[in-house]
Length: 115
Length: 112
Figure 1: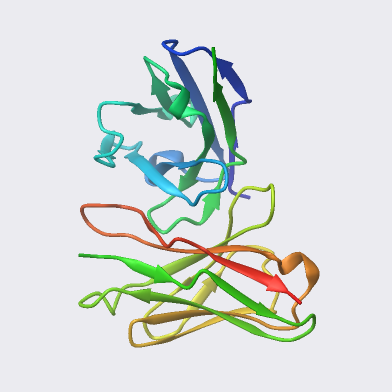
Figure 2 (figure 1 turned 180 degrees about the horizontal axis):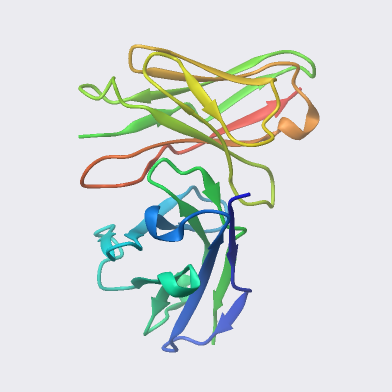
């Protein structure tokens, strides 16, 4: 069974850094794209970026380019989404998703940024 | 430019059927899409992939009440025998070479 398991909820202050994770299991992690999707309260789904773990090919939504970093570690089948300077506007639910034709979702990680 | 468009809402009585429509922009009518369900306070769930010829591939455990079809640039999600827990937002999603994920704005399905 394909599963994506994300790290737990985070509460941070503006200016802090954060790295959340998404661990894949039940399939060959290196061979499938992993994307990150943001959802703010009451809003729709917004793609942030995507990575192919096999060769680390990474694409970013221009709206998020430079604001976040996406990476992956194939040795532990885990993808990451990282911030170095959090803002209150980064408060949202973040989902990882498998493949360009999304066929599996993580359960979501709630990130709250507040002073 | 690749865009997917959804109507904001759809409704039908309990036990009836409802169609949710996703329209792929002009020049991209051969694109496949995926449907995702998001129930209130839950994360998205993959339902199925729908090809331009109407063939579709469902995710694991998706009931037979969920099916799909296509006509030109339109991709349809068909929910029959509506149940109360089908009340949800339904998103279509496609992909392009430059922009891997395009999401529709979502259709809120209400069971009357």
